Image (tube, rainbow, N blue to C red; front, side, top):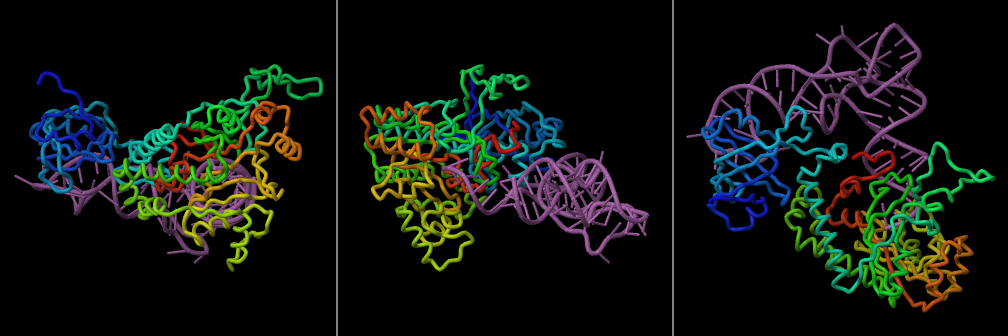
Length: 465
RNA sequence: UCCUCAGUAGCUCAGUUGGUUAGAGCGGCGGACUGUUAAUCCGUAGGUCGUAGGUUCGAGUCCUACCUGGGGAGCCA
């Protein structure tokens, strides 16, 4: 054997390489043993499982074995053999060992034992090396891929909507300003207003809070498009379900009404859950055993059951007749509170619920107005434990109705002239929704804090790493 | 932003009505053990008690402000 390439742990466990000489590189999770033999668990992140490397003490200098500590990176050359011990089928009997990068155990923060997620957030640069976060981020990748696959297979086009936007008209939340102005010497107009004509784009700009409006432009030519990109909200939100920078998937479809929209949302979510079950079982089983014993049951349950679909008006009726005492009032015209949504999803129906046809006053200007002149074709998908995972609607395609609504809600029509023009030139019925990628991941992984499903969470007062 | 709980060793926590030298488990280190699985057993080091003020003879403990984190609410994905 003149030349050998490194094998990953995943390959060693899946391919039939028994009794072959192999090279392994990875990071040491634990080392056990005695004077005669050392057992080294090596993980390279390709799979949740670590592989056991067995080193006979007599074959290696004492100092070398001493340097192999939790966290260090090593190269192992040896033979893949059936394990003599219980707990693993195969292991590597080492012939050569080399420490690639040492790791001082006095200061290395990760221990063999479990750590709190709060602590691991403070060492986000190292938490990838834990079983839990390895699993979460492998799943995050798999679901990202599945999203593209789903839409591609359905004939959707991936549309890149802008990250920097000049429109702050949508009202989806507070925005982060993008500027190159000198903050120590801000140019002012005569009336003391900031003179944005001196700014990079010659106008005020922000980070996007949604690609929807631009997505609609694409859909009204390409039929079906989707976006999948970063989204920014400068809200001072401090909850386990909010981050300032997150990833959102926003499909937008021409010739689709609200029912088509709901069908797509349900099919899409189920596809992604199914994809996880079919492709990430190792990681899901780990999460199920260590994080959330009901995770797999819940995933299967969502697949098996149809989502409940009901109108806002009916939901209000159900809540009022429930006999349940709520802290906040339930009354037609008021927005539903978290406790109300939770009652419907977790107590009453015990499955995902899609609510539609909300009062116009509590929803966005672009939603299609119903004939009752009171409600709009909004659609919220509510999930157990997570709450609103999708928000969407059929869009108002009637130019005059849209314009009137914008005036009523003080949306600056001049800034959105391009949005209005699509209703002037060959308008069609269309719909879409926004899925919070991290919220979906919370559901699929069982993680209860959104900061633990995104590699580097951005929250108020925290932009470390 | 509001409500609420918390901050003590590397980690997770205990610390009584304020009282003398602040404890445990885990992890680390040293040793024992012929194949271990979160190994086990013996030994050992390790602390500006979140920060700044204040009350008191005396503060980890009480008070005030601030910082950070958790949970709940709002905003929403």
